[in-house]
Image (cartoon, rainbow, N blue to C red; front, side):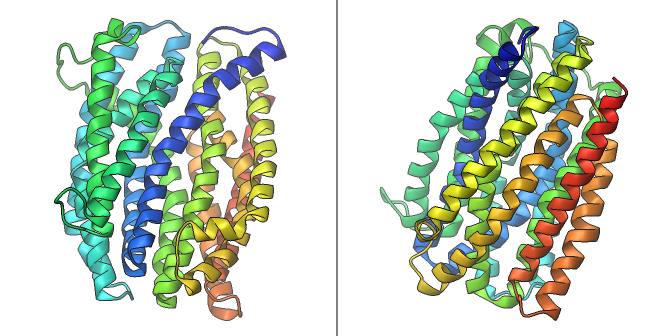
Length: 446
């Protein structure tokens, strides 16, 4: 990254960072996309089981792992201030912290998740698939947490093309492994939905190996001497990472867990409803990679400008990011409206699941515009290291507005399972409005 002076230069640099980030996010999410779509071709029961398991996994992983997101603004601001020694120390300590977090996640999955599944109103065979899928994912938990740190390090230096290349190469590997473990190939038995968990874990291990080799032996990463010598744990750096990262992680957890909670509540409407809900939500999450990529880009670039004390430049990047996200949301909504039936058919051959999925996809349309405003603003505020207020916004809008509204519509109107989606849309919209107000307040102090 470098200092820019004109609007044209800023747009060019913004797109230069955004495109690799977007392709990286798409590739990472496509792993989950293929888990769901390929499992759906195996059976509706396996699709429902993977739906339950993946939603529990996403809530836990993004919430606890999201604490490590505090690493990005710290490194990007240090890069803007040209404090290379601070970057090296922070990345090394973040790796230690990632291992601790991964062990905590393993504990949750092995001791608490079985209790949760037993108290859900779902069929026993769906419970079995869900838990075994999570057990298979446990193999890759430590590798993916460490990879998350190394990826944040490379991205914060503006080297987003490197992580893009890594994830683009990992996607075909994941699809191949899915085919082997889900359907049974090359002498390996068919594991169904559980096989998707094994495939993803192996892919995570390969990603970590490649990232480690890059950080050790390729410039500019190798110049920071990360992992060449192990230093003692620094509680002061851990404290800084946790103080900045915890509100970010909790905000991410409140946002992602509301979708997981809705999926669990949806279980009372039967396996068909869960499968259709998960299919539509999976595609909606795929579209969410657009505003999420803008968000990650703004965290990097706003943090860089703030670290260099160019606050007016940071504001201009915020405007560029939000505007681009809204325009892309319009395009995505048109595509979804025109191709709703072919999209639904990607997930299932079951006629009942197909019809329900088409209806759920209509609600995905309304997600796009709230996400297009909320996600970029969240990223920008993280670049400013403003993380506490967005945390409270996430808590209130998703859990005190979205979930109660959804419950009322689902149980006291004729909306049924679609009522929860009305609640989700309401929560997302209220969160977007509050975040915009917060960003305006931040600009007034410039």
